[in-house]
Image (cartoon, rainbow, N blue to C red):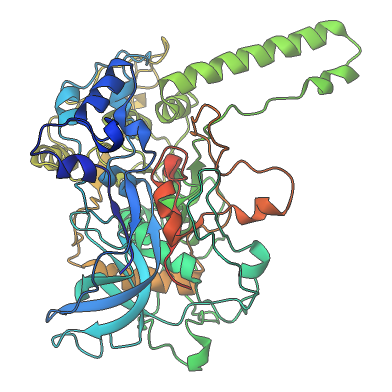
Length: 584
């Protein structure tokens, strides 16, 4: 059975019981002294191997299927930054780690050194991957036919404690999968995947927009790539959007009422699959209201991953959604040629001066923290938001987000409605598996215990706004801060607040995907090779010139080339997602 697993450290582990000396041919290649010498030279020993993962074929397929388990043949696996953190390759910077450079005056994390020591390092033989799509080969004797049977297509989400989806076959609990119709597979000429991992490039294949649009409009089936990402992005996004329902109801909007029809048993023609319901009772939200009355939400990293699905679901429910995109490069400003048409040289000099100011401000903001700077800017601009969906994580983001959401409200439709801050990461982006302290702090915030005592003191470039607006003698003009509710959708939790497990959430997100056309993002990568630092030793993975190869460098990777994804610049940074195609 082929698999992708951690192979870094096998050589040193096999020789750990003996004193390292010279290896084959008198070369001290696998000895521990080599790592020490590299450290003396200022190099990280891990740099000798780009990825800790490798393609292996030594494992045997599972032969025993438990009572409540299901044996699945994997076709596609969805990957994101959390999988890279579980392996130990990515170190997402939290907002606390940037406090030394931030001008807000906040103190750094007191537990920084302890957090570094607690960072998870995957052991040798660990198989990453949580979200998958595949076909059922065998079921346990306690798995009923109404749940799943042989030959059915299923999607599932593994636990962060176990993972193991990057393999040809996997055993999964029946409560973590859900049956789906046959995926949409466009008819096209076969395109061979790259069969070997090359140092020069990684073969990537992506369906073009034309190929994805070939599916009939009456058939809303999802492709294998979309289904591989659906559990990964849909489960946290759906649970997070459910925390906004109170605002939707309070502001006069009707919650999207999905017809209570099990997805695997659609009405009408069976060949139509998950056909969207038509007619006036389709459950669509009425949008006969102005943008100022609609509830407003800010989605961090709303271009991909759970943020993209949450933004789509909120739009379907009638929200006005603002999406934050962490662009990893300098934004192109006005071209110098635009000033050639100006006859006055003074105006041209003034424009150039403004460009320099904008470039300087952008460099300064990127050195601090783009998310914190964005929220602070929105607060200074007196922007009114009703909810924030955080997919970045960090204590500083919560504090600045609370100050933004807690601004006094003058709108009558919002005065009696509490704001909502929902995160799927928490205070420590580096720590995927939360500790008891993390859960305790989240509970204290949710109960609003302690007021502002747990808030860092920060200043925003000398700007400070008083909560009580309208400084007059009349006390009636003073406004109170808006209450802010806090919710943490922890990816470690299998059961949500309503008692539903992963199976129930997958069932709900499948309904939304089929009825509302809410689907994960597939296609070319948004920020290809932005973090590659190879010093010219190899060409960038996704840096393409003009030609047909640009269309082939998408977010779908052949199974044997998946180890190249778990490196800086592999595509999982900035909230990106990747699909590893195991079969098909």
